Length: 80
Image (tube, rainbow, N blue to C red):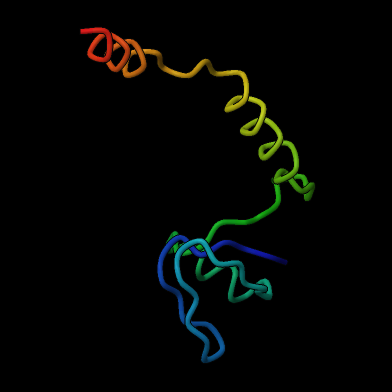
C-alpha cells in the first residue's frame, strides 16, 4: 500500500523526505504509522481521497476573490 512520509524516513536503504510517497508492506507500515512517520494515501475504507481533495482545493482557490487592498492602495498613490 502507498504512504506519504511525514518526516524523513529511511526504508529499505532509501531515504524519503517529508511529502514523498513510498510503498510499504503491512509490517513496515504498522511500525511507521505507530511513530507517526507516515500516513496512508488512502482513506480508511481503501478508497483514494486524493482526486476529491485536489478538486476541492482547486475549486476553493478559484472561487476565492482576490484581495483588492493592494490594488486600491496602488491606484490611490498613482492618482496623487
